[in-house]
Length: 394
Ligand code: GLA
Image 1 (cartoon, protein in one colour):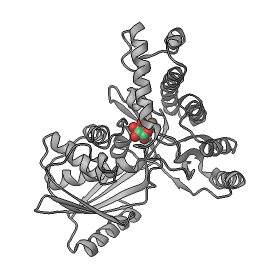
Image 2: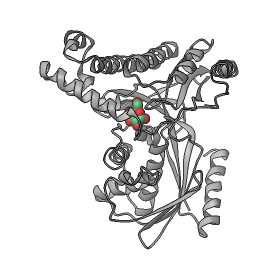
Image 3: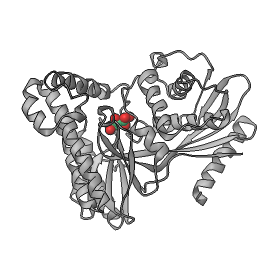
């Protein structure tokens, strides 16, 4: 553990002691993630290339004896509590609050047969929220790991990711895949994870040591539950159902080849056809991108990121003018390999893969272009890819 990390662990333990009046039993760091290629492929059973990043959620907890879970979310200045073990399904109907994430994890774990304990929890985060960097998955994984430690069970990374996905799909009400949670717990320093979301096999692929990931905040915020995010999985299922009538081997859009799409595309509405065009093309890009990284060809990988952004913008229609400006500005900077927006889209962060030495010039160009168009400087941060979630006990 680096000095910086141990300090952060100690800080959250210190805050816990001050606020709760006793010692922490378990402390967890759960990182956010980037997803450089494979946009919206996880729920289509395609291939994705995420990686864990430095900005994280930090959780300090100690067990209680009354089955009550009390969470102090410092960044929000809010405290919320719930009682185990009877958790109502679809808590989101009571307002879509952040407490639904820990409640949903408790619900999913209990449904899977795990016995949980109550906890006092302090939550601190330097991960921007509702910004495409997976702050909700980080919260879910932080709680899951805390319960694993306090209750004496241990899940493998894939099972953890599936608990997170169940939380999102069935409790919170977002039809997302499992990429975010998997990246949070399975990340490796300086590596992207090339994950097959059907077979769940994965491979770690290195990025060049002298590369950096720059994250730029477009300032547009979306909440997945409120946005059109859920429309996309539904549209993909609808397109699949039509194509399946002609080619029964098609179970998801992952199974559709470029040739099949050309042959059968006229059976789809214009919108369905656009969505399918993105998914089929993105599957090819993710696989080509993984092959490029395997041979150390980050230039090709970056070109594919650029094509991926364009396809998201034009076919999946989940970009924004702010994100498009950030992408186009980044692409023009010497030393920038590629850029595409993060996560579900409809706002949030731009993610830029760049030679480390080109970072100052990149940020300067972006600030100038954004300032000219929108009259403000977009916040940006530079990060490396990091290891997945970590736990310490006292
Ligand atoms: C969000 C979802 C993920 C994935 C991405 C898009 O982050 O939570 O499951 O679908 O969007 O790739």
